Length: 97
Image (cartoon, rainbow, N blue to C red; front, side, top):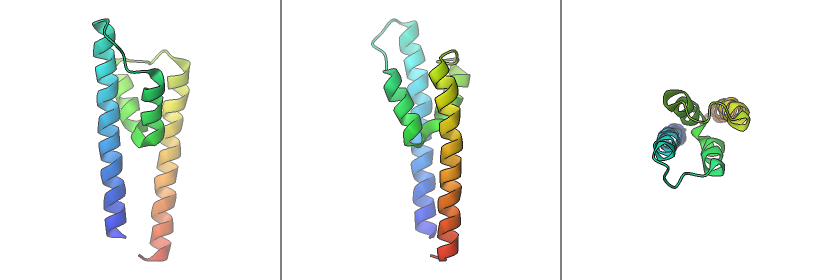
């Protein structure tokens, strides 16, 4: 079980760091009028597990904070992923792996 939990933690750490820097990069590109990261890519990284990094990126870089879909979907993904990780952890604990 320890290996599985470490793998899950590693995955979430990496995907959240990626999400955070994606929001920062997109904000920088917006200021420079450069080619941007698509909104669907920013949402998908949240869906893939980077919701906390996305939420932090939104707040730190003040990016996409006025867009309704980001106001709703990113926090919702944080809740869903916290629930999912909790459920998997409880399930693995019951299996005593």
